[in-house]
Length: 207
Image 1: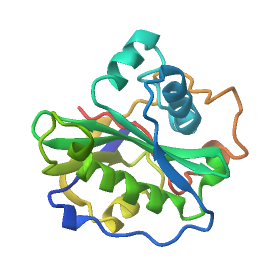
Image 2: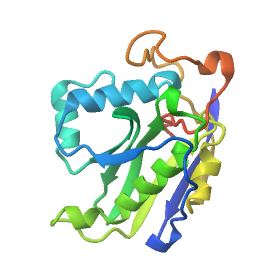
Image 3: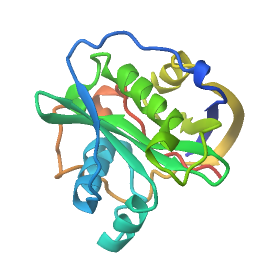
């Protein structure tokens, strides 16, 4: 399946626009301990419905190398339960990429996606405050595609991200294996029966 991929960016901290208050209370905190087990759980739990497959073959050591390389994981919790997460990957050019972003299926449709993206983007902008070897962030960027949740692109734009490039006809990744989530059939809803949900993100790898 051919897909369209949009690349979006912010080039100033002032580009970030606030989100409305979500319908459920959520605390968003950084997972400061390097934990491949926890990160893989988040990856499968959020990405299971959206064909996130790239990292399923990774070894424990590969997960540890990723997390120990300056990547930050910010997790949203509702009443002590993980609701979604944002993964921030610093680049060599004072940029930060939002490499993973999404919600658990039970947390979607409640306005939490906008709030999580707002906080995650703010933490990308002040990432150097927590890492002495980093220069101040000059750019925050991400990409999304036409296989993503139907509100994803609008959510990014509503937070102040601007499209700077579009690739049409990039190959999709829908044939790369089964993504069971935490276990096969997990989640009260499925995009195969109800369509994409607000706040979800999948990996869309361009050419």
